[in-house]
Image (cartoon, rainbow, N blue to C red):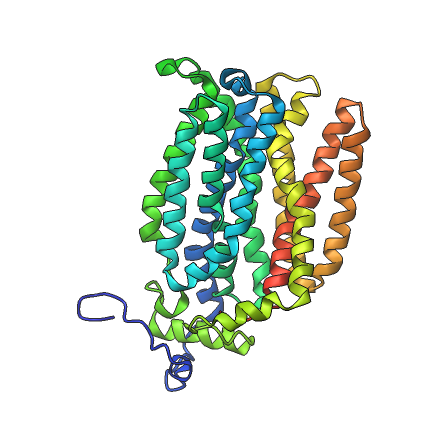
Amino acid sequence: MSNSGSVVPLTTDKVDLYEAHVDTSQVDERRLLRKIDIRVVPWLGLLYFLNFLDRGSIGNAKLYHMETDLGITDKQYLIALTAFFFPYALLEPASNVILRRVRPSIWLSSMMFVWGIVMMCHGFLHNYGGLVTLRVLLGVAEAGLYPGIVFYISCWYKRSELGTRVAAFFTSATIAGAFSGLLAAAISNMNGVAGKPGWSWIFILEGLFTVLCAVASYWVVSNFPETAGFLTKEERVFVIRRLRDDMQFSAGGEAFQARYIWQSLRDWKTYLAMGIYMGFDGPLFAFSLFTPTIIDELGYTATTANLLSVPVYIWSCIVTVIVGLVGDRLGKRGYINLILFGTGLVGYIILITSRTPALSYFACFLASSAIYPTVPNSVAWVASNVEGS
């Protein structure tokens, strides 16, 4: 610490960062990990909770006559949903490059602030053009959060610890799915307040809360281990040493090197990983956006459909945590994926063919228990096999 009380960053040279002269024998590794877990993971979970809540709230809003009020067809609604993913997919890689050059507390919080504003604007929509425009802007604003969080977590933990932490923060997506139904059902009661329909208030209030959390994030989100103010110098050195012992030599402030990007683009395994990601990402977003509609079409009212989606997400949350723990324990993430893909396939086949409400509802449990755990398991699998900034 300096005389002014600010954190003095460790030097950025590889050898100096390791700092062999610093005695870390008194650092308790378990206590240090708990300290990092408490400071890093929960707030990231909140960020992703709001990310998933805001992105998927349009599925809940649709049940409260949004299409009718905007004068759009089902096809136009689907086009608007699709428009979100073009900037979202294109800007993800660029965002991580920026994240390494800009502090996480600034970059992640700024993205969150912008998408919160965009979400609030959804509540003032009047036509189809405005909806498509806002979905594109939302895709731009949200693009960097998930890959940024995964990269950020990988800068703190060893490979064998990554799956559990990624699963822990990703469970917030399942919690968001459960909570969004409850929240939408409650907010819909504001229908007519200030002359606005209930679906408008879903966007306005959720967006407002996101903006408030974004402002707090500028101070809550810590930066990389070498400058972490909540750790002592000995603890910062210890974190970097254990990461380098785990063959993560970029730990400790390695300068950005463009050659790593070109190497990854020439590596066939990059495209294999992209294929795996596409395999579960499509079903994931389809499920989060259409679960209320699927249940609604079984013959339930809008509010009942939103409420019936809650148990589905609670179940997927439990399975996601279990799979994260098993993945770190066994290290056989590829085999785990095969089991999950098989389970999801069965769930979707039932959803396509079933005409029985109870069976279709059961298939929602099967599908969600496969889709959600696959995401953190696959991301931890890939992140554990790459290195370099």
